[in-house]
Amino acid sequence: MSEISSCLELSQRARASVVLVTTGEEEHDNASKHVYEYLTQLLRYSQFVIWRILLCRMHTYKLMHALSVSKQLRHLDALSAQTRV
Image (tube, rainbow, N blue to C red; front, top):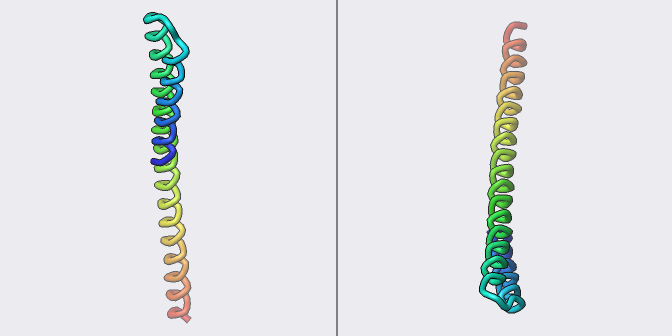
């Protein structure tokens, strides 16, 4: 979450610098609009990255569980083979 807060801080600084540079009210409104659109894109990308991380972790846990079950089944097969002999 610190990356998101640093993005927010950078966006606020960018907005402040844009406000200082623009002189007219219309220019100020347009500049603010573009800065907010940029911030919205950053937040959407951050959400996308967070969802990708969660999905990757979920798939990793499923894979780990499947490997664990497979290992347990092999162990049970080996035990049953030993008891047959």
